[in-house]
Amino acid sequence: MKTSPFAPEHLPNLPDIAGVRMASCEAGIRYQDRKDLTLFELAEGTQVAGVLTRSKTASAPVDWCREALGGKRARALIVNSGNANAFTGVRGRQAVEMTTHNVCEALGCTPGEVFVASTGVIGEPLDASAFGARVRELSENLMPDAWTDAAKAIMTTDTYPKLSTRGFEMDGIPVRLNGIAKGAGMIAPDMATMLCFIFTDAPVSADILQSLLAPAVDRSFNSITIDGDTSTSDTVLLFATGRAGAEAEKPMHLEDPTDPRIEALREALGDITRDLAQQIVKDGEGISKFVTIRVCGAETENAARKIALSIGNSPLVKTAIAGEDPNWGRVVMAVGKAGERADRDALSIWFGDQLVAERGEVSGDYSEDRAARYMKNGEIELKVDVGVGEAGATIWTCDLTHEYISINADYRS
Image (cartoon, rainbow, N blue to C red; front, side, top):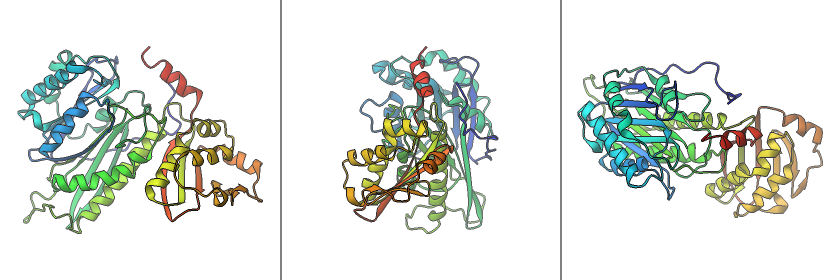
């Protein structure tokens, strides 16, 4: 499998987060000679928020996390790749219970404080007993700086690990966010096979975390699509250890949602989720083009997003981009099928900064040669004004190539 042309030359070096330690190993779940199991230990009192897939065939780990989020506290996160533990019936729940039992024995916590995620093949039972001993081994090798190994351990068809970090200050006290994510195929928004885990030392309650995470997900992971397929396992979890400024004379603790200090956290969370979401698209299976789609002039933001996703999910639009064909007629088609209000005779379309269509017909200044040259770029931007309102939305996607078919045709081989 070819490495994405958008893979970074250098991975970011993520700093320590007070109250977070991790370890990863080769458990042989599906892959050979690569890490596929990672364990995070979180300090006592860590608060947690999450956004999970709305798929009606959600995995056993998603069901477990949905229940555990009610407790608002976390002591551990364990993630495996190679097997999604989805559509595995009673055995799927049993595998989660065995995994959490092993974590509790290793770390001395309760099952409700353990969060579990799995990614990989759907429909194959996960034998948690096969890697039970590895959990104890991981607990004995926890470190605060093994972020890259953790990001690699959660990969499936990804061609590079996805990491991001942000920092800011509250009352002069440094606060840090680190995040890792995985995803390359079966990517479409429905919350938003993608996983994302973000850790911060900010002293914030679970309720505030949840109020910040949901809109951040909407504008990031809910605004990406690679192939239009929603995974059974989509999970975003945000953990706050509360250790920033713990030694200060007057320790911070943010519980009031109107506290102005929360704005800095909101901005940093928005940045890190958007960065990780775009990294996922830039590692899309078989990708050759990274595409930004902006829709304006819509009735509502939701309508604009639906129109943008209609364009981004269209196989005809995506294959035209792969073939470097400025076929704006396919964009018109995708706008029309979205089911949202659009004025055909006021519709305008741009490829980059070139106006290709206006007032419902081809622009008088349109140049096919210029548009074709623009389509040879690695990063493409399409803009559409649907002419019925003031709202807009932006989504990120990629093209659809022969390589995507090859990867998914051979996925279980």
